Image (cartoon, rainbow, N blue to C red; front, side, top):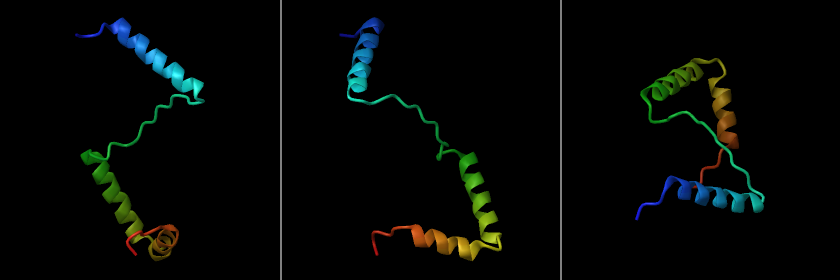
Length: 72
């Protein structure tokens, strides 16, 4: 049995009210679509710029220094 739009809205609002009582608040976050060709092209472009930088070795050492590698 399908629920009405009004019933769905009521249930959602009750759910949100319960979450707010728990001290939570809603948050909408937009992030890049990592599946898009444009994202891949831009990531590749930025990686190439970083690779050609005069600071590439120093930058990579920094990243390695602050990174955790669980398999090691």
